[in-house]
Image 1 (cartoon, rainbow, N blue to C red):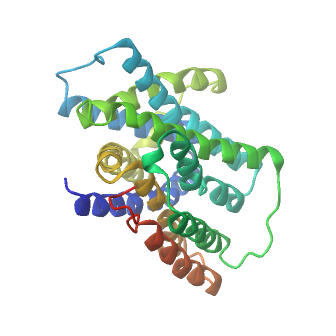
Image 2 (cartoon, rainbow, N blue to C red):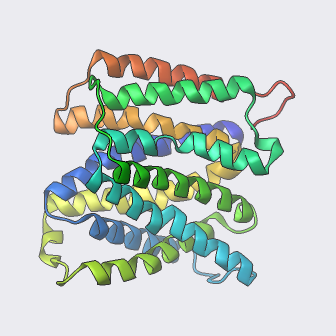
Length: 297
């Protein structure tokens, strides 16, 4: 995969991941719980990836195995728990905006460790502008936010966990087969979410609900496309175009979510959101510019 295809891959992943918010909302309104959704989509992804690549099961060293554990926690179970818990205590708008700060946190975290991946002043300005645009899209005409310290803190925690996931990916990207990496992420995500499921569930999951078309169709979308295929592609994209450059595409999720919600849920789109789209794309173009010294971030 060359850099051009890497950018195309990032756009495709954001298109799919942006739509998953609507898929998850449909599943939630039809009786599934958040942790059940995570378990079922991750289990599908792990089985698919295990069928595709099953020649290797353990990392080369125990240190690498611990990194894979960290990837599964920060990119899977912990990210899921913090984001969904934030939605329980805070508003959707607050959570979307704060979780949307992931590119900024990722740039700060990785830039503080790797000098070669620090954004230029022009790119930093672009990232901030893109964040402002994303905020306008999320607000979509809503002028005031209701602050909730616990919910907002959990949303920021979700953003921070994905930034750590992006950092940890640098240690194994290019060193192992990308399918092996992605499979390990889902394996440890599943392993570390099971104790939570055991503690929080007092009864057996309702398996009969899985026979309903609206349930299994949305679960297949989440498990096959959004999880196994898109995680696989995203991990490859991180290696090809760079962590920070790739992560800034996350801002685009808000646009996809807005359009999908309009089509599926008939939610309104305001002039504020349209302005946000223009501002967001302008900022993203600035971020994707090459540094004056040459090369990509």
